Amino acid sequence: MRFSFILAVLAVAFAEIIPIESIDQFYDLANKDGTYTVVKYYTEWCSHCKKLKSVYKELDEQLSSESNLNAPIEFVEVDCDTYGSTICKRLPGYPIVEVVKPPTLDANTTVTDTPTLFERVKRAIFGENTWTISDDRIVRFEGSRSVNPLQGFITMVVNKDVMKRQLMDIIEGRPIEAQDKVLNAIKEYYNVLEHNNLVHERARLERILKTNDDGQLDIVKGQLELINLLETTNEIVDEL
Image 1 (spheres, one colour):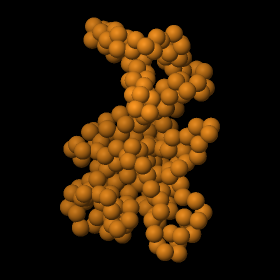
Image 2: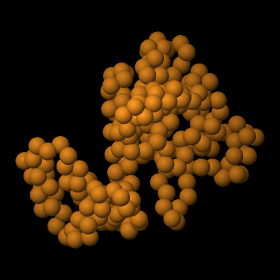
Image 3: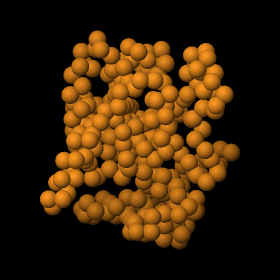
Image 4: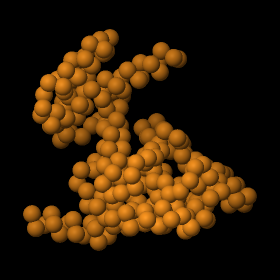
């Protein structure tokens, strides 16, 4: 108990919000494999940005010691007075907080959002921003800018995306964590699932969730998310 408390204190002590000092730095952080990037976009003249400053600092401190997160996160802040025509160009106003999900990688792919050496040289010479982040990796916060709603939002986005990636590993036959009981149970379920009867199976799982008050039905919830992914995959195949 005491050791856990010491770890929590150390996590808060070393919590750090990274100020963006170059375009390269921003995209290097946003494209880091396996890490979720929380970004605050602000300006010095914006009154709401000034109010968010202390909230964002407290949010960083709390989530740096958060045990409910299933993946590492980094907090950064972008001064849009400096990067208004580049990093902040797509934004409708300030302040804005977003979660940038890491790139999706498998054994046969690389990070497609990372520029080539030629693109890096081109940007350095002509001042062009050739780095991009695909829209499906960005989730924007739309609620009240206070600690609890922001913390709940970030936790939800990160954990939901981590689960989706784990389920895709199961669907595509990649290895999963051997010690994870929930994932192993979902993998066994997938191996016996009748893929031509997903509608019926969805209804069955939803009935279990509605009629059971047990808040620990992680396996059933994971199975339902697996059904969602399979239906989406089938829709894409049908379109092709």
